[in-house]
Amino acid sequence: MTTVTKLFDAPEIAERVERIAAEIAGAVSGDPTLVGLLKGSFVFLADLVRALDRIGRQPRIDFLRLSSYGQARESSRNVRLIGDAPSDLQGRHVVVVDDIVDTGRSLQFAKNLVEQAGAAKVWTCALVDKPSRRAVDIKADFVGFTVDDVFVVGYGIDFAEDHRHLPYIGTVE
Image (cartoon, rainbow, N blue to C red; front, side):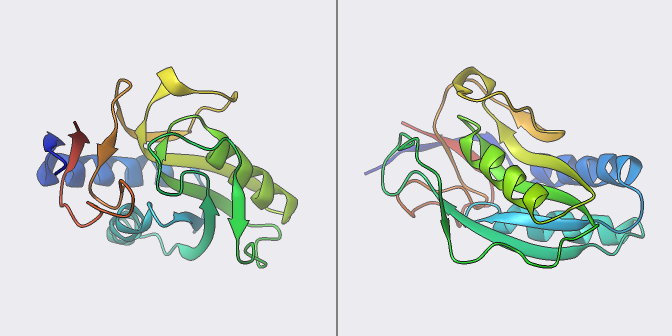
């Protein structure tokens, strides 16, 4: 059985999501397109778009589904696109939204895809950042929480497809 120790509770996350929305609204002119990386970003993305709406923004929403972990705790180092890339990004201001930046490979891969799709400008956003694990040179423009080299779950983030449902972010031991 996996033990999960709470790291950030639901009110802390909600407060941070509101601040990230304000940061995005201050940096990105107009109504951005948010591209969520599935599956992990779905909870964060849903709360983020509602927070943007509360401050008067009307973001468009799209998704990319990538895979690099499978059922493991370590990245395979090979990021794969599952399905199609968004096709309606030409000339748009896009924020790529990820649940966690670990090695940075998935976020870099997604950012490159969005740029190749013709986005006018691309920003990156992650709920959790783990800079000690970075394998590629990328830094998210908007970050919720920075953590040490711990394995986190909850609020959409999984371990072998478990724990996504948790309303908080915790560490797995």
